[in-house]
Amino acid sequence: MALKPSDFWTWRGKIGRAAYASVGILLFAIKHNLDRAIALAYGYKWGIFNYWIFNQPAGIDTLSGQQAKYYATLIVVAIPFIWIGVVLTLRRLRDANLPLWMVAFFFLPFLNLVFFLILAIIPSASTSLPTRTTSRGFYYSVSKVVPDSELGSAVTGIVATAVLAIVTTTLSARGLGNYGWGLFVGIPFFLGLNSVLIYGFHRPRSLGKCLLVSLLSVALVGAALFAVAIEGLICLLMALPLAIVVALFGGFIGYILQQRQSFPAESLRVFSLIFVLLPGLVFLENAIAEKPPLYEVRTSLVVNAEPEKVWPKLVTFSALKPPQELLFQTGIAYPIRAEIDGTGVGAIRHCVFSTGEFVEPIKVWDEPRLLKFAVSAQPRVMDELSPYRDLHPPHLENYLLSREGQFLLTPIPGGKTLLEGTTWYQNRFWPAAYWHVWSDYIIHRIHMRVLVHIKSLAENNDSPQKVK
Image (tube, rainbow, N blue to C red; front, side):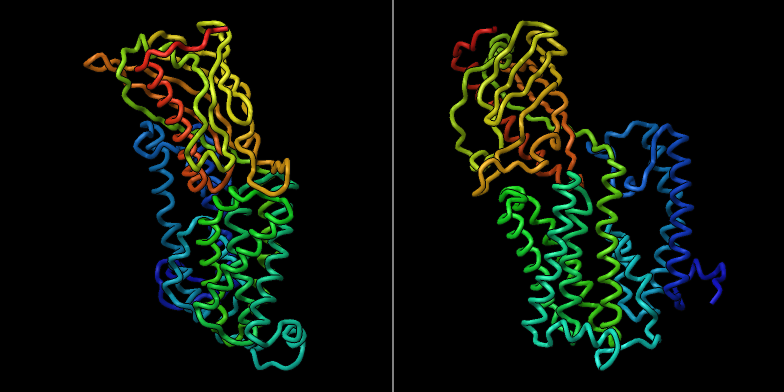
């Protein structure tokens, strides 16, 4: 059926999968090129992944005037496309006899792409397709592979999906060194969705059991990655909250799809789609290699001493006591002492951590107010917690990158000093909004360990280490 102009503005009626896919791809192409033109006009670059990445990690309140105009222009241009996308998605859901509230998935970053592709392959509710009662043909052959029993279909769904996920994870992490959307969002969604598609192949299953199957598939993959020395325990635990949420979302989509009579045919199509899409996304991310945002972590405390007494204690300081915090007992690197070669701009500071040392050329030496330094070399971020010795996944080095740091001393009444430590860093894990919460917390705890030590040295007037 040919589309009329009014079809883009009203949510009444239906739209088939072919028209929905064609119009969606065309509108995305138009929107993407408009965004590229706008970005170019403001002096910025624009790529596919910019729809999921906000390159202002400090927040919208830190935008400059030009940046505010730039993003405002993008938003204004996006409004008609959002309206059309919502309208067409509602009509596609109605045509496929799916709940209209699922239009909310249109607004979920990255997952809206998968949702679009699923809607593009699911046929209209009126289309004649093989059902669960079909007893011949290709679908009958598949039905003989998937056990009819509830336990057997659950185990098949979990194991078959987990095997494919482990292969893709190994390709992304160890083969390409890519820790991106495909790894941390695509694979958990794949686990949740496809394990439920197999689990519900013969008959609809309850929501609770579908979600349980989704979680068990995630657990199996995590255990396998730990057992075969692909990843350590701490990194897996950090990824777990995100993986659980995304896998449950995938399992929920699978639960809705398996309610349909034509589900067996559709499940195979969706499974095939995700099987091809996931490795493709991993390779695309690796090829584009999007530049991560620059984050800032600022930590401060009050020292009961004047800046002149605090300054020598931060330029170089004696060994800290062994950490008592659980965080640093898991293998995450922690500071031990600081040394320096020379004085003034050009001096080289060495901040020794449990895994090695940061080499920090001094950029600003404004005694006793500001010490600012670059980072020319840094050690691995942690020693993995694993039964295997010398486990070194690629992300231990050159994925959490410290770029600059500084100590700022501000005198306050009463002969006290506000001591502030700041680190500027990049995190090459995606989605950045999730992973920088972890990295911000870790860096903040590192700051506090150093600042509390400097405070103790200054207030007790302990002698600092000698400058080399």
